[in-house]
Amino acid sequence: MSKSILITGASTGIGAETASHLASGNHLLLHYNSSAQAARNVAADVEKRGGQATLLQADLSGEAGCRQLHAELARRTDRLDVLVNNAGGMIKRHGIRDYQWGLMEDIFALNTFSAMMMTALCVPLLEKGQDPGIITITSLAIRHGGPTATIYAAAKGALDAFTRGMARELAPKIRVNAVAPGVVATPFHDKVTSPAQIKAWTETTPLRKIGAPMHIASAVKFIMENDFMTGETIDINGGLFMR
Image (cartoon, rainbow, N blue to C red; front, side, top):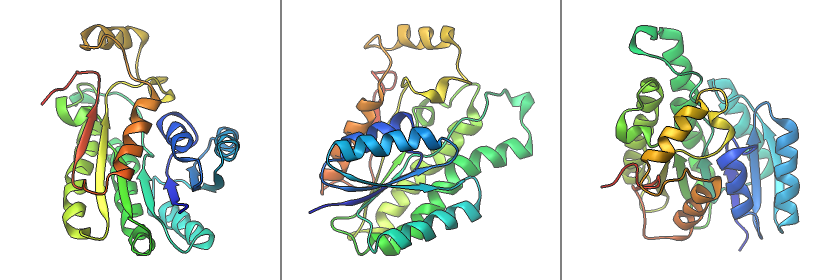
């Protein structure tokens, strides 16, 4: 049976690759904010792979944008099988002396509040879905604290706790899990990470390489298909963090 899947932040990187992985036979509702052409390219790829694509534009850094996206979603489908909370960003690196209230609000709004609000808004549609699930993309930063990006790490850490809480609250009908990527080669790093830092991370990673979006997308697909998993965060980081 075809699944109805909403992916936030689907125009580039992990979101775009996840769309490709989940395309075949499914209806993908692809959210983007400003990258319209990139989103159209992802939609074309989804349809080439045998899926149906619907583009939805919204700025998820505020409540109004989240409600706008949900309203558009509800107009396009009467059920949701999977919600992938992928939208987010570091905004900028910072030290403790650079903390500003506005920066903290911006980082939490984009990374934490948007995913929490979209989850809350989508629950009624998910309750009508087939084996419904929520999958949230967090970060390796929740494990090592994210030096020079500790506000971002805290924002993603809040989503880690939110994942476990929602898994209990929404069971047994809706499963809730997360994926915590390590360093992945996406546009995420273009403005916030230097080539020297990427090189340093590569050299300190046990597998001596950084990840690709497909490594995360395949984990999302695995979670979606495993109906005996809830409340878990899967770490995909080349060995930078081990349990």
